[in-house]
Length: 219
Length: 123
Image 1 (cartoon, rainbow over the protein chains, first blue to last red):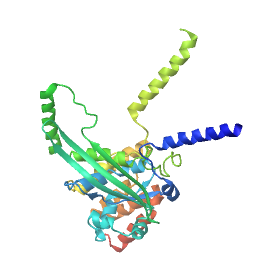
Image 2: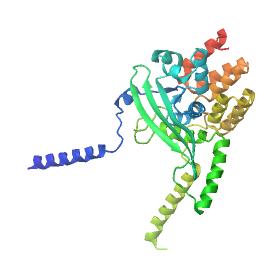
Image 3: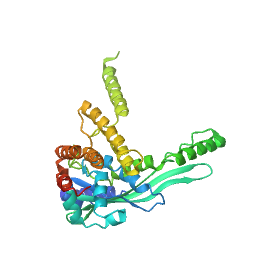
Image 4: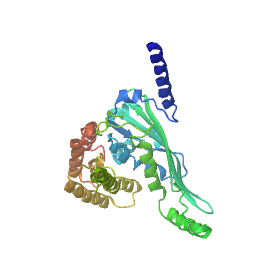
């Protein structure tokens, strides 16, 4: 009798646990946890967007989320310069560089391969939207294993704040925004948001905390 | 005031002010960033002279030193890169060494750069 009710309870518990697992994003962190990378080499991102600024606007803002997550991030511009001196001048060439070379020169445990798939401003009658989308893949440079993949998008239109003021007000806002968006590099701050969203630790399906974080090993 | 009410009320006020304080300062960061990331972007854009970029980073370094916090990974190495491009090799070497001291994880790469600098390969 007791064992039957125990079995029932175990069954219910298993169901509850499984139910918890059916959340939209599940990531297998076993390889990542085993590899325990300390240092991350971020390669210049591939750019699938029409804007040439995309790659470096993104690259220059990846250090913050990664370092605050607890990793040592190899100096972005210096790494780019080293690639150039070795004849690798485009992100496509750099993404083909062999893992053992990257590990021996930079002393990195893992490399981050980023692709920017959307970067720029779309002009519409009522509004204009500046948006950045990127995907990333973290690869163990010792074994070549993919430790983690992720994607994120950020947009100037998030929150959908119409601000009120009726149609005329909206048209004025759109006009002002278009001026702002075209006169400066509007994608840059949005790329910063996308980068933080993509590469910070401590959220579902995100990167794990690294050894320099007080939260290392808690996730 | 009712003695039984005073205690929960106080906790409420205290937690409320803690929340507000949290809103003002944001979560504490591991490093003091200052203009590191914008300066890296500036380097790639190449619109301002390297001297001005190095000055901005040196100025921020004073601020960081005055608060006793640490600059982020790559900060000193980036300064080293700027001094390299300005032909100030002594200052470059010094910056690469500081990076290595603050972040021993950078050791292999910093040694690679220092070795190349000695043989003149990185120029």
